[in-house]
Image 1 (cartoon, rainbow, N blue to C red):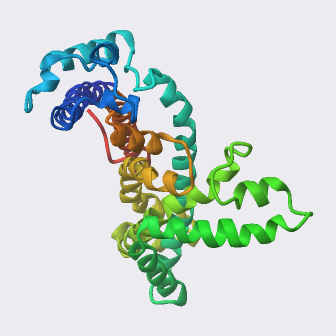
Image 2: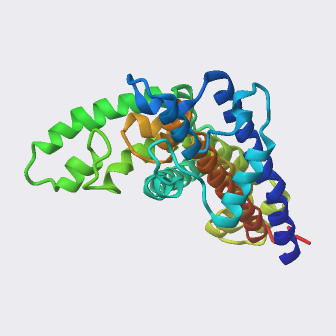
Length: 336
């Protein structure tokens, strides 16, 4: 197990470096073709050549390769690697704020949002999938199949806007008119957007919207896996041995059925981090998604590269934990 973990950690190195270089090259091409992003700082004002040159050099856009379309800027990439891995310096944005400070302010909101989405998706999705899988052809089975198809077919930006309007605004206004309902519920949970006074409660509805589409997939995956395993030989053997139905379902059937579901949940964390861009915009959450979208719009290469590099490392670590969890769920799996 230890050698397997070390081997996987070593595999992270080319993955992270490859991702960083790809982002570096794409952002360099963007600057080479669209021009110096530092001009955006001055807005409508026209800076002197000396002011523009000084600001460009200070923000790290003074390398001549950024004026040569197609140049991969290897020297700039090596300098960036040294800053990140030797000094943990991810650079600054156009307002001269360190990227690490921007991330430290935004990351807690996104982590809470993704955590709520994962818990909502896992608990409700697995419960609905087990219910449908064990009662194939029943009312609950059809209810789960129809509702999951409906949720999957609705784009997340449509679902988010509808939920914000009818749950956060319309239903929330009804709750806010009742004196006996605590403000943490009426203004926090059922608010129209993110409220700094309730940093966790106001993320509950956005988190549920973020996890809704994945919940439908989790439910369908669990249902299919349960239906396959209830017909397996080892389940029939367990029943023939006279084991209680609760033990047959809970230990023998559900345990093996969760392996593909855990795999999906692990991979889905990366998708949720990406989907947070849309959800955070709709509910005005100042998280990582909003930070990346703003950086891409304004051409802040150091912010985009720094944030995405951190997200890639989180994604790789989560997938490693998921792989290790396989051995817990299925004792037949061994890592050498």
